[in-house]
Amino acid sequence: MADLLSEPPVFSGNFAFFFDLDGTLADIKPHPDQVFVPPDVLKRLARLAEMNDGAVALISGRSMAELDKLARPYRFPLAGVHGAERRDINGQTHRVTLPEEIVQPLEQALKTGMAALKGAELETKGMAFALHYRQAPEHEEAIFALARKMVENWGQLAMQPGKCVIELKPSGINKGAAIDAFLQESPFKGRKPIFIGDDLTDEHGFEVVNAKAGISVKVGAGTTHAQWRLGCVNDVHQWLKRITDHQEQEKKALTNRRDGYESLSRSI
Image 1 (cartoon, rainbow, N blue to C red):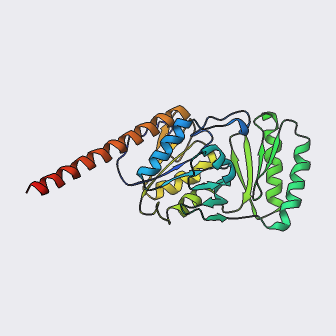
Image 2 (spheres, one colour):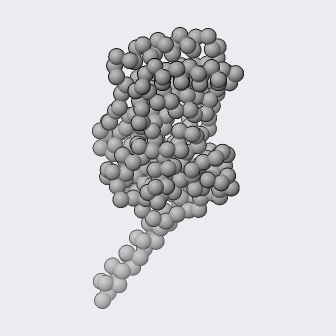
C-alpha cells in the first residue's frame, strides 16, 4: 500500500482485537528484558477485553511465558513465537514444534556460527531461534547468511526477518495463521478483526485481517499491507484510550436506553 496512510478513527462494531507487543504496546529497548507495558495500558486492555467478551489477544514473537510476565496481573489469550504456541480463551495450549532430532544439531550450528559475531545474541525458544543483532548491526549480512544456510540444511525451517532480528521457526507458522485460528473460536468467531503491529513479522497478520474485511494498523514508517497507520507506541496508547472510552460511552448509552424502555413499559 502507499506510504500515505491516515490514523485510524474510532470504530463502532463487533470487534476482535489483536495486538503485537514490542514496538506496538511497548517501546523497543536495547535489550528485550528491558521492555515493559505501562500499567495503565494493561488496565485498558483488560477493560477492552471485558467489554468485548474476552476477544482481545496478544500476538508476538515472544514466548507465551514472557507475554504472561509482561501482562501481569492480567491473563489474555496469547499467540507466542509468531503462533508456534497459542493459548485460547479457555486456557488450552496449542503448540507446533520442530522435529526433536533437528533441535540439538541446529542449536549447535547456530551457536558455532554466532560465536564469531561479537555483540550478536542467540535466543533459544524451544520451537524457534532468534538471531539478534540490535547491538551489532555490522553483522546483519553475516546473520542473514547464517540463517539462510540453516534453512537450506533443514527444510522444516522458515526464516522470518524482523527489526534487527531473524527468527528461525517451523515452516508454515506466522501471525496471520495465529489470528485466523483465533477467529475460528469463541469469543473471536463472528467478530471483525482489528490487528495492530509494527514489524515485518506482522505483515502476514495484516493480510489475513484485510482478507476478512477487518482493520489493519501499522505502527511507524515503512511500506505495509496495513490500511491505517499510527506513528509510534504512544499513538497506540492514545488510540486504545479513545476506543475504550468510546465503547464505554456506547455501553452507557445502550443501558440508559434500555432502562428508559423498561421504565416506559412499567408505566404503560
